[in-house]
Image (cartoon, rainbow, N blue to C red; front, side, top):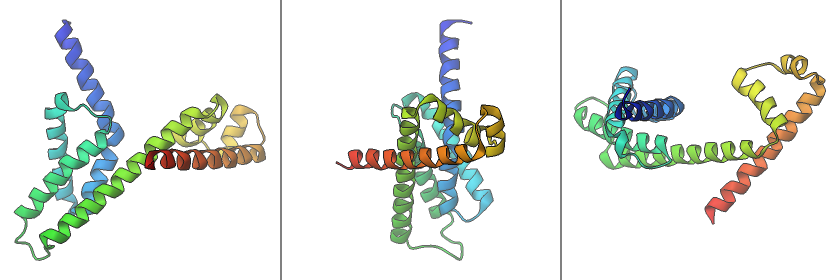
Length: 178
């Protein structure tokens, strides 16, 4: 495989990983604005195609925000095209709804980034407990058997971890708002 092919493969792999990580947010955004499930899926596919075609120009860290912006434009085009249907929102109202949804999704994206940052600050044991519980989907009893700790101790640990993460995310938000 030549260098250009390897480079293209790495770009495709990066795009695929980012898309898999953020597709739920992008698709969820579309669903909030397009009532018809089939139309929402079509718009999502169009968004993914545009993102794929323009990925070489993507330079930011906010992949989902970029995708949501593309989705916003696709939804506006969809609304304009379907303006003859029975239920049509005033263009100004639609614009405000889309802007509000975009802000909410950006806030959610920021909270997720803060949470990821805070999880990285936890010690390895706490990170492993979170991984067992939320990535693997193990029940607390199963984790107890795996790590050889009492169930009550694990509930206390999860409570402590949750409080620590909540405080850390809050601090991160305060720093960002300055």
